[in-house]
Length: 84
Ligand SMILES: [Zn+2]
Image (tube, rainbow, N blue to C red):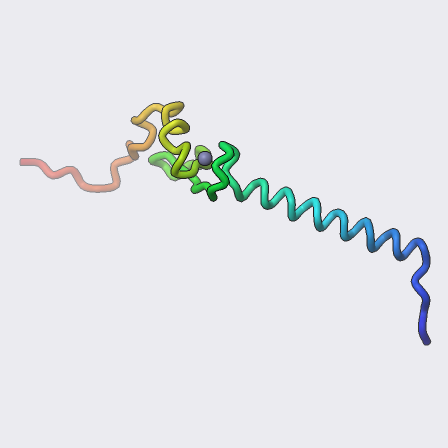
């Protein structure tokens, strides 16, 4: 039994297709660094592994300026402190 697609079905498929496209565009926007370099950014984490921001090689220095340098150091001492 063959069923002809109804207008409703076509509309639904179109909507789904549009949603997929929107999502793809959004993903692409997320994948490229928003500084406009067109490069793919890397995630930056602080010393505790907490996510800070994304940056590419073009804007990495600029983005890192906004953070205190000491947050990149892990102040939880996992390594034993050697005493002389
Ligand atoms: Zn960038």
